[in-house]
Amino acid sequence: MKIRYAEENDIPSVVELCRAHAQYERSHFEEKNQQQLLYEFFFHSHLNLKCLVAEQDSEIVGYATFFKQFSTWDASHYIYLDCLYVKEKARGQGIGKQIMRMIKDYAQSENCPVIQWQTPSFNEKAILFYDKLGAEKKSKERFFWKL
Image (tube, rainbow, N blue to C red; front, side, top):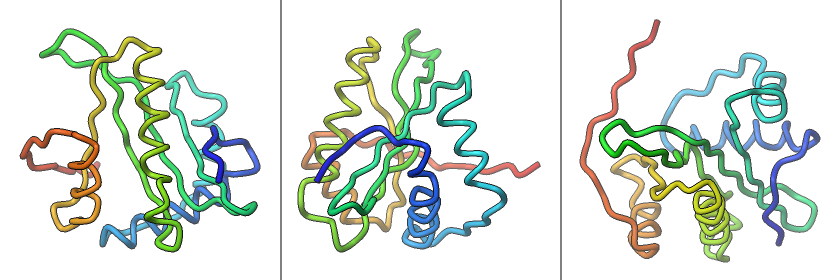
């Protein structure tokens, strides 16, 4: 098993994992040119969006995306973990922990003292995983304002 930054040829696998991730989180996934858009955002954007993939036996079995954000309250940057997903058949093998360790290393290299993320309240396995990492919880509601 290998955790590495995504390469251009990984994009179709990442889109498939996004679809599976959305289904797992009981959410809607509408593919509208995701491959091209993710290619642009991962490799040609000023946003500095990062994507890690977990590769096992030549198959991409997990991914995480994250980027640097700014906190006005703290007057400092932090890393926002947008997505972390590992296929069910690959869970329990330390993949998530290795991905989080790599994100932590990246955050430290960018002088970001905090990593933030969200997970649905019904995702008990993820919550247990994050608790074991030593992460703290904040209770907030997430809102979507579609335009």
